[in-house]
Image (cartoon, rainbow, N blue to C red; front, side, top):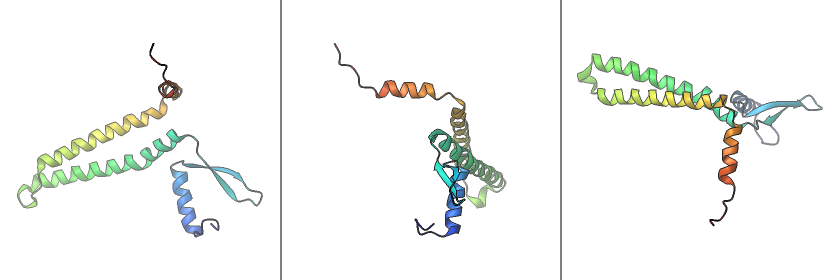
Length: 130
């Protein structure tokens, strides 16, 4: 808190948010008994946790709102002036986004050594043509 010149409340909120997404992990306690934190070295895990905790929930809320609006729009087509076709396209787009997110989250269950091997191959200098 002293180092950053921030209040205990703000630091607590920030640390809790970082812990929630596993961007940081609890480290050992200091000699004074103060909790320390370390950066999570597994960036894939951090990204997947953010997607799982924040984006998945956000897409579900958007989908629910779109579905509710579609029900209302179909009952009151005239006065609301909502384009039903556009609303249905929004629903399709959100469904595709949810499916894509689900596929991305499944990547966390893969063995990433194969991906690292492919990255090593693509980043190595190419030999001159003979």
